[in-house]
Amino acid sequence: MLRHLRPTLVLLTGLTLVTGLAYPLAMTGLAGALFPAQAEGSLVRGSDGTLVGSALIGQAFASARYFHGRPSATVAPDPVDAAKTVPAPYNAANSGGANLGPTNPALIDRVKADIAALKAENPADPVPQDLVTTSGSGLDPDVSPEAALFQVPRVAKARGLSEDSVRALVAGQVREPSLGFLGERRVNVLALNRALDAQQAR
Image 1 (spheres, one colour):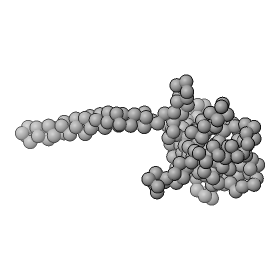
Image 2: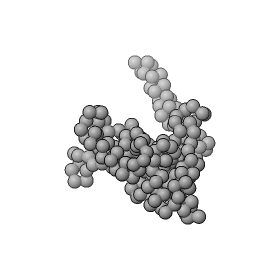
Image 3: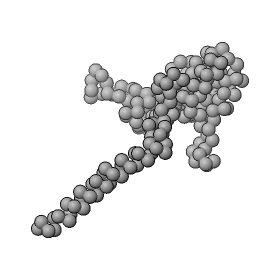
Image 4: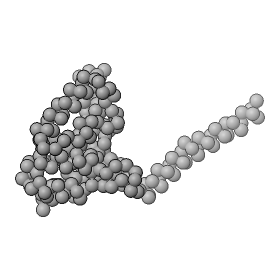
């Protein structure tokens, strides 16, 4: 019996060490050496070295002086009642969508309220759909160029800038699809807001 068991245990131990320890450590080390910024979460730091966010995870910008990202449906445990959850936009520890169907009254009411608020900011242009719909992860850091341009009048007014200068800033932040065909044209909201602050500081 032991003669049959020994090769199995040796194989199990060997494969565990190779696939459960050596391979993950090697890949982690290789990723850290070749792509250090991405391996650490694509963290974004200010000029003084303080952490301001991640290029891969959106964050809630509430001020009218900043461009806003997509709505986020992520939640966190309710501090009062652990059996319940409360809204926690861009909660990276609990990534997920709203899971509300298109006929759900809560979703319909929320979208209608968002559209009304956006139309009050910019009645001249149609509201881009990504400003009123959540992404599947709830963490999307990007918006479409149309969504960024829609917000130009509000941001320009709040900062006392010309709409043309803010529009030009948006145009400079548009990223094309990877390799020319993977993904959509997009604007990273954090990068855009940092560029906006830098422009005004100058």
